[in-house]
Amino acid sequence: MVKKSILQRVFCITAFLVASQATAKTADIESVRVWSGPDHTRAVFDLSAQADYKLFQLDNPPRVVIDVDAGRLKSNLDLPKNRDIKGIRYSENKERVRLVLDLNKDFKPKSFLLKPTGKYGHRLVVDLNHQQEQPHKTIEQIVSENRDVLIAIDAGHGGEDPGAIGASGTYEKEVTLKIARALEKKINAQKGMKAMVIRDGDYYIKLRDRFKKARDHRADLFVSIHADAFHSSEVNGASVYVLSQRGASSEAAKWLADSENQADSIGGVKIEDKRDMLSQVLYDLSQNAAMEESHKAGQAVYSALKNKVKLHGRGFGQAAFIVLKSPDVPSMLIETGYISNPDDEKNLKSPAHIDKLTTQITSGIQNYFYQSPPPRTWIATQSKAKKHVVQSGDTLSAIASRNGTSIDTIKSINNKNNNSVMVGEVLFLPQ
Image (cartoon, rainbow, N blue to C red; front, side, top):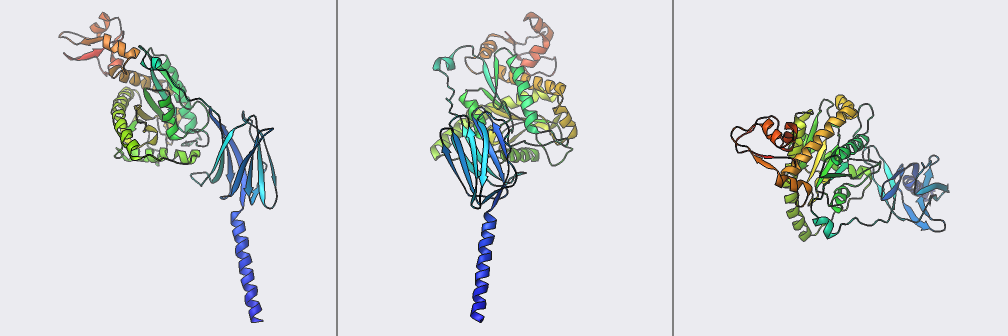
C-alpha cells in the first residue's frame, strides 16, 4: 500500500508538471494589425505568450499559412483593408491554430517573434517584402554641373511605433510626418535645393534603413524630425542634435538618444549589426568627416531657430543616436519640442507654429549650404560667383541695394542676427 501510494503521488506530480508545461506553452492570439509601406506590408499578431509556429507558402491562389502550436483564438481577427492582403482565414483544434493570409500576389515572406517591450507584449511579425530595384544614378548625373542639393527628411517613428504620446493623446509619429511634409515643401520652394521624405506614410522603417535610403539617393544632408517626451512635463523647447561617439552633451541628450534608439525593438526589428575590423576602420574614417559637416549644419539650423523658436537649454547638443550614424552623409536630429509638455504639444499641432518652425529650419539648411556648398551644385556656383568683402564705409543696406537684393536675404544666407558689418568681413550674396 505504501509503495502504491508513492507511485500514485509520483504519477500525479508528473501529470501536473506536464499539464503546467503544456499550459505555459499555450498562447492566445489576441489581435492583428497591418501596416503598409512603399516596399513591404507588415502583419503583426499580438500573443499572450511566446509561441512555437511554422510558416509556409501556397500557390494558386497565393497565400501564407501560419500554424501556431498550442494556440488559441481569443477573438475574431478583423483585418483592415490592405493593398497586399485580401483577407484572413483561420481555424483551430487542440494542437494548433491555423492562420491563412490570402494575398493579391506572390511575396517572399519573412517572419519572427518579438519579446515584450514598452506597451507591447509578445508579437509574431510577418513581413511581405516587395521586389524593388535599388535607386542608382549614372556618373553623368552624379558629376553634372549645377545640380540641386538633396536633403533627406526623416519623420521619426511610424506604424507599430507611435513614438511619444502627449497628454491629450497626440502621437509623435503623426506630428513628425506633418512637419516633415511641411519642411519638404519649404525646401523645394528654394532655388538649388530639393527634398525627399524618407517615411511618407504610417509605417515603420528601421533606424539604419532610414539613413541607408538617404545614402542610396546620394543625399547631401539627412535631417531626422522628432517630438519626444521627457520624464518631467515641465521640460519644453526645441533642440538640434548631432552625433557623438564619446558621450552625450547633457542629461536630456542621453535620455533622448536612449529613448530613440529603442525604436527598432518597438517598431519590430531583429537587430543584426555585424561588421568586420577592416570595414569598421574605413567606416570610422568616413564618419569622422561626416561628423564635422554635421556639426556645421547643426549649428546653422540652431542659429536660425534660436531667435524665432523657444529652445530647450542651450538648444544644441550631441548624443549617440543610431539614426545619425551614416558614414558619409552629414546628419542632424531636430527635437521640434517635447510632446510631454502641454504647451509644446499644442504648438506642434498648430499650422502657424509648424510654418514658423519649418521656415527657420529651411533658412538654417540654406545657410549651411551657402557656407559649405557641395561641388558642382547650383549653390556652389552662386557662392563662388557672389561674394563681397566689407570695406570701410559699407553698410548692409548699401550692399543689398548695389547687388539688387534685400537686407533680410543677406542676413539669412550669412547667418547674421543684426545689421552690423565689420571691415574685412566676407558676405555671401545671392546670384
